[in-house]
Image (cartoon, rainbow, N blue to C red; front, side, top):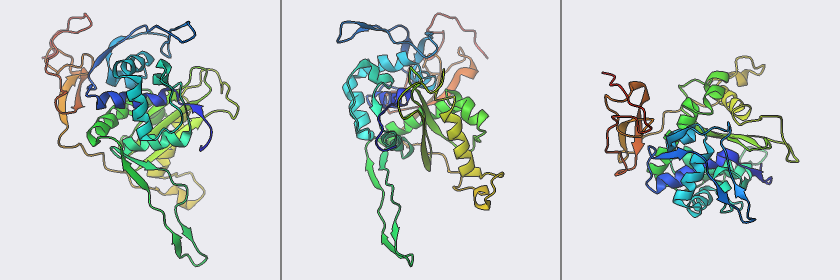
Length: 330
């Protein structure tokens, strides 16, 4: 937890997207999910691929994060600059070395698990990082408090940027790579609002789920002491995400099957959703094209999106930008 350096996998991608949102790129920005080739320092070509080996074509960066498409993160990082990505991650709590390679965007960088949890606390707290502290307090034999350290809090992100990212990471839990494991498999009620990100390395050596609610953050990591494949096709959605979901369900609703009466009761109250800063703009948009919703776009593709002021779309969706004509729905 405190010393091991393990590849972050897709758990690093939110830093790419945070840097992009901070650069005033909106969640509706469209990037082509297609092949990417670059020359490496040794003269060989690097041809990354998505986990399933397929390319899905143009998509918004919100969808790219929800579905964890590698090409979207790589191309977005190239557009805003790897230096911006690295500095964002560093500011949020990643203290291990961050190499400025294209593969960094999809989590080739090695991190300590506690660092990753600290960095994600910035999302949960809407821009304020909380340094993890292992000692809650020190008491004497009579219960008198001798030392009561206070959490170290530092605002490292614009709260509006953080709130947009919370919304995008909620998408991972509500309809992305974490949905089946958390909402269906683990049975965590939608009453508990949550965001997070799965993480999987190419060789199945490290798998993660980093997730948070408005009052609790938890990181789940699976791996072996000596890095090697855990099991074939190991993924962050397959093991860490359901563990995280089960943990959160027991925290907020208790465990009725526990032998210990104390464990049958909830540990924390179900929190209220995050507030939306007044200055943030909201618009009803088409999730496919990223344009403003209209009668020419299917209603099932309409979502309420958040934008930094001045980054809202101005064009209405009337035909599919990807070449498919749409029939009006009303």
